[in-house]
Image 1 (cartoon, rainbow, N blue to C red):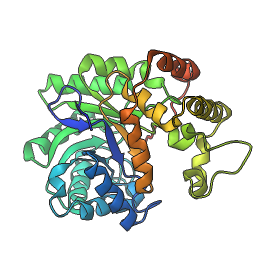
Image 2 (image 1 turned 120 degrees about the vertical axis):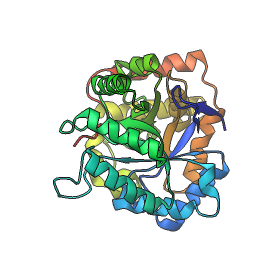
Image 3 (image 1 turned 90 degrees about the horizontal axis):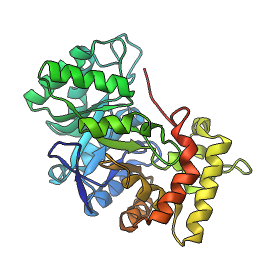
Length: 324
């Protein structure tokens, strides 16, 4: 496993990170802990979760899985900001909400600090200075080591960085965003911004939720047990262009005696400013398969072909963006 700095911070993160959205939902507790331990054994140190994942079950399972000395082996990150209830203060990035959610996350994770605390999405109803001062206080208290943003537009992120610089507050060191062959919209503004300001990019949905594996088609039902089968609402991400890209990538990988997941992840790891790519799994074998991308070296020819087949995805709407 290779490790990269998270932006211009000194924090080293594994090239592949473990996404745990499926823990407690599409993967039961025993399976989830097995996946977590497999990831750690294979050198993955970046463990990504959020307070809302599986109704808080993901954090609880990770907390149990990291007992016995494993906590010190990982860079543990969680998020807050998306709705946790129906109350007026059950969402957003106010001091009230963030301090309450961090304390509850720490209890579920069975730790007294998180290595990276991320704002899950931009909150237009709370002054950024309030959010950033709260995060700065969390770092100074020792409950948080580094802070990051997620689902921020470029102008929102730059405004936050400017406020941090103006008031000498801890800065965001990373941005988590949808980024893949099926969604290259970050290359328009977000990637140049992160390169200029020294932030590490953490892509989520690197396989477009499985679309880039080529397993989905508009001509046949979703495979049994797949994300689109167990969560029919996921099919909102389907359209003809994305499904065609998945099929083209599958055939191209087949002709090169490799897997489409390997090509998609290896391509993403080669993009500028990318620090760690989040991969999810519902069983340990799936994680092992994703790790193959680390050994694949993309030639200039392959890189050019992948760029050509996905170029149209630089424009238009992002594949995913979560807002309150």
